[in-house]
Image (cartoon, rainbow, N blue to C red; front, side, top):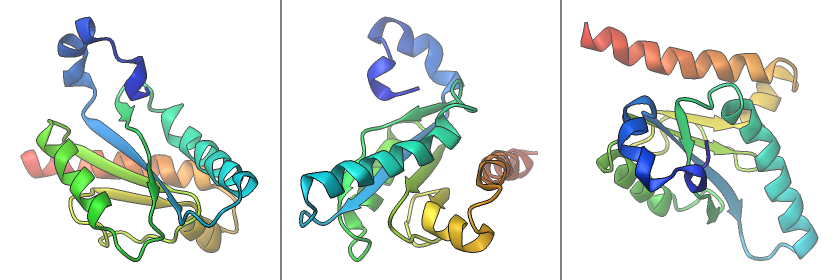
Length: 146
């Protein structure tokens, strides 16, 4: 579910079910032509479908962090910390064009980078791997609570 689809009157009732925040990271530099920027956003949108569609009832997608090419992740880390303070138990960062690896972003529970998945799998089976990674993240924390 996208943040803009949430209605104020129902959020307090629904919020316990939405424990995971998805933060899209475009990684634009500002040097892209309008066509290149549009293509980057389309790649990210298509990659995000692999999470948003199967997990619609549990994940809220926040607005994208558009700029930054992975060198300085301080803004992205601050956004992760802030959404955690807002009450989300899990934070996922997704990017289509920037190679981010798990552990590089403080405050983030899971990094999903299309570039990493394409290199590891040759593009095949990405949807299943992403689904498994998300479920592992949820199960890992539920085992800690036991």
